[in-house]
View (cartoon, rainbow, N blue to C red):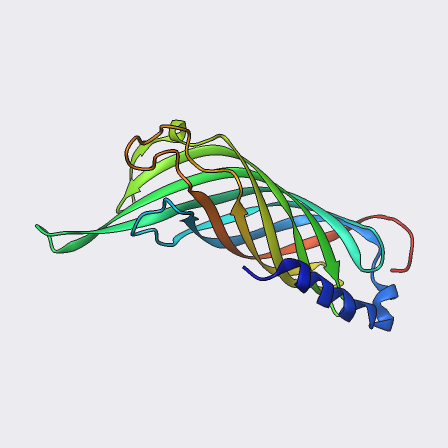
Length: 218
C-alpha cells in the first residue's frame, strides 16, 4: 500500500504549479462507473491458499467541487469481495477450488485532488453492508453462509486515475477493510475470532455528466 499522505502532498505541489488549474470545471458531476476487481483476505489469521478472486464493481458517482483542484466524491456501489482457496485432490489428480464470494453495497466517501491535465489521486473511508455470502466449489454454488460474517464493514480506500474534461473516467483503487470479517465464534478452532479482513484492487471506467454549477469558470 503506497504512502497516501506523501502521495497527496506531492500531487498538491504539482497541481499548485499549474497555471491552468484555475480553469478546471467547478461544476458538480453525476455519473456511472463499472469495473473489475481482484479480492483476497489479509490479516494474521489467513491460511494458505488465500488466492485472488475475480469479481466486479459498479454503481453511481456524485462529485462536488470545493475549488479548482479539490473535490469530494460519494459513490453508491455494488462491490464483490472474498478470496479463493485451492487444494489438490489425489484421486482425480486435479486441483479443486473453493471461492468465498461476498457481495456488498458500498458507500465510499472520498477527497479527490485533480491536476489541470486531468490526473487525480483520491483517498477516504468506505462504509459497506453485506448483501450476500456464498461458498462455491469449482464454480458451483455450495451453500449460503452470510450468517458467518459481520453485516457491516468500515474500511478505507486510496486510488489514482485520469478524469477528462468531457467526463471520461479511468482509475485504479485499493480498498481494505478495518472491521474484522467473521462473527465471533463463526468457525470455532479454525478462524478463532479471526484477525481477517477484506482487501480489493479495482480497475474501472466511467462517465461523469455535468450537474449544477458552483461558480468559477467552465
